[in-house]
Amino acid sequence: MMAAFFAIVRRDLALSLGSGGGAGLGVVFFLSVVTVVPFAVGPDLVLLARIGPAILWIGALLASLIGLERLFAADAEDGSLDALTLSALPLELAAAAKGLAHWLATGLPLVLAAPVLALMLNLEPAAIGAVVLTLLVGTPAVTFLGLIGAAFAGAFRRGGLLIAVLVIPLAIPVLIFAVSATQAAVVGPVPFGTPFRVLLGLTLFALVLGPVAAAAALRAARS
Amino acid sequence: MAILDLANPVRFMSLSARILPWIAGAAVVTLAVGFFLAFRAPPDYQQGETVRIMYIHVPFAWLGLFGYSMMAASSIGILVWRHPLADVAHKAAAPVGATFTALCLVTGALWGRPMWGTYWVWDARLTSMLVLLLLYLGLMALRAAIDEPNRAGRAAAVLTLVGFINVPIVKFSVDWWNTLHQPASVFRMGGSTIESSLLWPLLVCAIGFTLLFLALHMLGMRTEILRRRVQALEARAAAEAMA
Picture 1 (cartoon, helix red, strand yellow):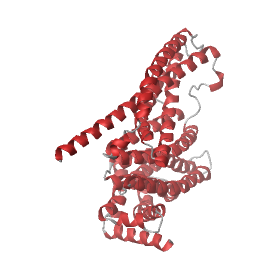
Picture 2 (cartoon, helix red, strand yellow):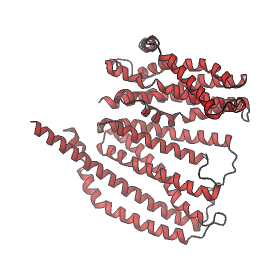
Picture 3 (cartoon, chains in turn green, cyan):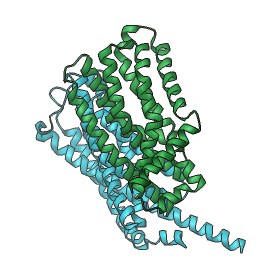
Picture 4 (cartoon, helix red, strand yellow):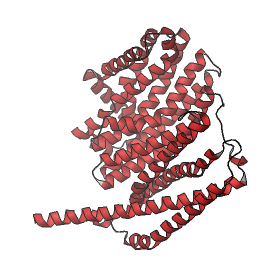
């Protein structure tokens, strides 16, 4: 069973990395969002340092949603979704494998790009560390909650805005605790660990909820 | 024909046809009494006359949550028993619940202007209700995006349950975020400290609006069933014309 799980992870990774632009495009989009903000709020470095963690998180959140549209849609088109549904591997685990591969291909590059973007926003080293840590822990939650939207998009061939509209309300708690943790690391008043642990809990929760709900959505669409 | 079976709840139609006028009438009477009591009630010592917004605002908030809970219960009916009536109940509840939630936000804003000096504050309760409204709108968008009613219903049911699990988490998160960012300077009404002279009109209004909600919901369900019947008949007529 684990062999099938990792086979899906490897296949999806190979597909998204091989097709080119999969991982890189998300990072470029992330960079674009972060670049746009100073033009909107002005080049005030003090202000940017203060709102920097929030900008990075909004950028990462949007960038995480971008690639989700094709996650199940491509499989639905070429018939491999049927194979996944019929295989011995529970559909929940298949969805989790696809989520993991998607995060490795698109979420992890965002985390790795974040320190550079943080420097552009004049963040202090402590804030950079906190942002990267919260992104590392929090972006899987966004990706796995996004699995739900991706399942709808794949099953019903509707994408784009619908995914964002469905997933963003669900991702609000993640955003709250991720940015709170970063703020806590820089200015307090609560210790970094308090919101960070809640963020960890939210991620663990999303890791379960996302695949289960995505599988339910895929089944609902089929029969 | 599957769609014809969908319109099967004949009993619901005959039953609701008899009950609906009574619920609607009871709603009108209760609301009339409630509004009368609300205007008779003494003005608040601190808020003056604006406290009367409470008599509609609080029921709206309650019914926004009530509507979503109803949809969550219907979702279980859709997913577990695949009951067509549950699907109709789910679909009809969405616009009614969304409207009450939106009205709650609007009346809250109108109340906030004289009381807080601003239409909108990122208060924990306001923000949670806003997220609830977003969930409602997302659900309606999802239904609108899918052509086939059966599959649309099941998809919306999955999303409703995900949202239902998430609403308490959102509430908790927003409470945390709010206490972190904003001092508790905003005027807050302690739930249990309402004077009984203000509480009674509120309860009557809440019952009246609940009856209104049920009447609108039942009307929506009837409309939806009729719509599906028409669609089924049209499909059959088209099929016969083809043959």
